[in-house]
Image (cartoon, rainbow, N blue to C red; front, top):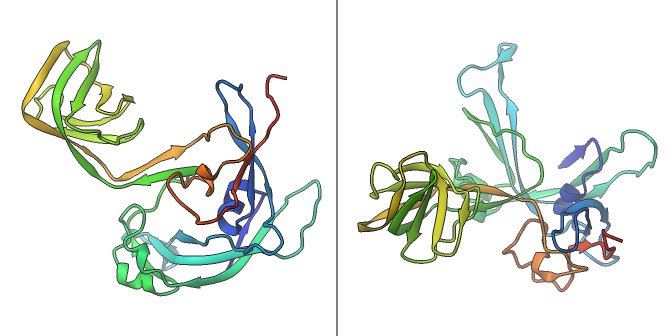
Length: 270
């Protein structure tokens, strides 16, 4: 297969074909704001195709010369592809197109995809497949951390100045920006909300209502994190670290001693 992008994209290039992602701190040493500014090719002897990726692509479904009204998209799945940069590299003051080429394989572990929308997991054992679909995503830029649905018990509740705080019976693992559905607490706290703050055993969300003093929830309620994703917008400031050896893959172990993210050692305040 062949994939072309119209301008250099360091993060996408690093995901597709390995190499080093180069990041620079535009903040301060105490409050870093590391952003991707460049990319370095794989070292001589390294696999130029990196770790491989899965690709999901959506296109309009055209019928009788116009967009179809029923299932208006084609949903294409390439469950495992290995790509490397190809073609000549021309450096000029103009559009710097990038082309990647490679091959695809089946991948039984793709299953229903990161968000559970692919309805034909058995077909993912083949190099590619497609089906008509009623939905296509809004375009996103950057890295996102995907997570599964998770349910925890709610043991305590409080509400102060239109901020609801729920305490869970065990560490919940929720993160700021994730969506949670609360049930079994009471009519004031129940519903679906966006998490605005958290500790290991508490999380908060905006709720316009009369203040509620800290009160035990009996019997316990539930809080269910919906399956989805949150943006990974920053990384720890470092010269090099194996903690982030795959861009965006916070918990991923590439089983490789080579770091794939390198941060500038320059002091941004100097």
